[in-house]
Structure formats: C-alpha cells, structure tokens
Length: 327
Image 1 (cartoon, rainbow, N blue to C red):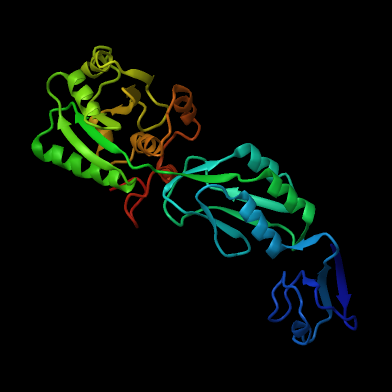
Image 2 (tube, rainbow, N blue to C red):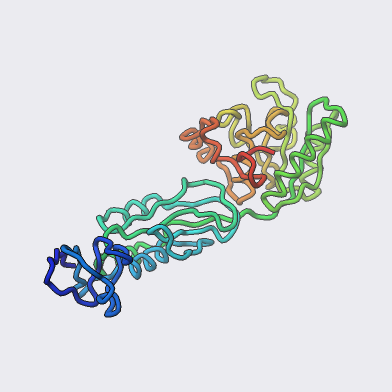
C-alpha cells in the first residue's frame, strides 16, 4: 500500500483508492474509469495505491468476518463501515477471549463482540468485524483465518421444567407465579410441565418430579441462611449433590444450585421466581443452554455480578419493547 497526495494537474488512475471523499465519491471507494470522469474540480486528492499483496477493505473485511464467525453466527452485509455478526439462533454468546485478543493484536484488524454469556435472540448483532485502514495485507487476513472462529452462540435447548413452591401461597398468588414462570420458560423454547405447592415430604416430591421427566426444577421458598431450613434437609434426603450454597450475583445471592438424578435444581426465595429480574434469570438461561454450572463456574459469576439497572443487558429480553428481564 502506498499513500499519495495528488495535486491539481496530476492524473489519478483507475484502481486507486480514495482516502478522502470527493463530491459524490465516498472515501474508501476504488476508482473506476467511469469515476475518473466524475471527479470534477479538485486541488488535492488523497489516494492509496494498491500494491501486490494488498487487499481492499471490502474483500478483506468479508473474509475477516467469516473467519471470526463460529457456530450459529451469520455474517450480515456491510453496514456503517463494519460487518455485523448476527445470531442465527436464540442463545448465549460464547467468546474465545484468548483467540480474540490474538486476532486483535493488529493495527489493521478489529473484531468486537458482546460480553461472554450475553443472551441474544435471533438476528441480534453479537459482534462486528472491521478493517481499520482502507487497504490491508494478505498476510494479515491469512493470519486471522488461521486463528479461526472467536464468536459462537450456544443455542437454548428444549427442556422440561418444573417448579416446586415451599411457601404458603394462596391460589391467586400461585397462579400469578405459574403465569410469570411459564412465560419465562417459553422464551427459552422450553416447556413448563408442573407447578406444585409442596406442604409435606419435600424429598419425595422432588424425586417424583425428577422421575416424571423434569430436567430442570425451580424450588421457590428456600431460606438459605437458616441451617435448619426444611428445603436444605429435603435436598440431602433426596440424594442431591449441592454445587454451591449462595451465588455471587446481586440481587440473588441466596440462590443455590444442585443436581438430583441428573436434573438441575435451582433454589431461591419465592420472590426471586416472580416477574422481577434477579440472578435466577441469569442462572436459568445458562441451565437451559446446556451449561453444567459447576461450583467453579458459579464462583466466577461475581465479576460483573452486580445486577444494577445499568446491567439490565444481562437479563433475557422476555418481551419485545419491555425492559430486559421484566414481564
């Protein structure tokens, strides 16, 4: 690539790239024979000459976008100077941070993404790819292609979900809970199979729910701070493996995650399962995307785990036009 400043009287040639717009010709345009006759009057012309081994930003950007795109990512047409990387399916954004940093260790290439774990819907832009200069080198694009995909979307899986309620809710409140939870579950493409008020043997109710086919169970009404909480005793009696008591997300630190006969169980105070957005919504999305939510994974959620109003992007967009996380 050779940058030149042409002065009045010098003749531009077809194939040169405009570094600054002139009249109706935009910056970055590759001059054609027809364009030469449309340049009109000018005193200075900033151009870039393409040399052997150079690649124009349009062709290079398309290749960069394709190289960076992994599973369930679609490259959209060039827009606002960059190539949008859109989600093909509803799911969680997955970013290979190490590869992305390696790819971006360049003065010519830039790929940006949404945060790892972000919830996206179909056609939502999960990232963008851009060539910084008007022309880059073939070896830069080849390097990006060797690095490979840095952005994926892990799709939500269709699962059978159940809810056990340990609080003394009247019928109207129970129905309100069922309607809110059903709407959340359907957003992820899953099915709410059972909502049951449990007043007796919790361990038996939990084992029965799992044996009936529930793959995910939400338990409302636990009191994690009470060492003698019946829910905690019931988990032990049901043979559960508790991954973690308490989750480093706020609001929602009193949640817990366990596994019973292969089914994932998320427990929370009853208020966490109604329409207000809490850490429960973040955990539910990860479980329904097939994540295992190990103790190590849960412990890492504290970084960015302060779920203030400004952090609403962390929640699912349950309803179009409504604030994320709200019903």
